[in-house]
Image (cartoon, rainbow, N blue to C red):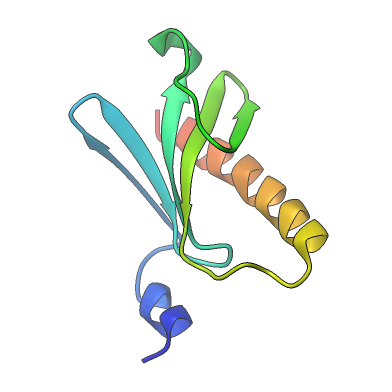
Length: 93
């Protein structure tokens, strides 16, 4: 079974919590896990990549796909995915 087929068995978004840490998993391209930080939680810890919107920051990303050939296209897709992730998080408050 290829990676896409494996991830497609799960919902597109999985939001979870372990102790005080909250996470979002995106099971479609670009497949990723990121930590969730809400503005009300205080100062956001560091991370290699961040996306902030509506008082929510996604950070400490782990990507499951290999390095894309077209990095500019990947950046655009990732930005849109992050926007959709924030919307999903806001819906689950």
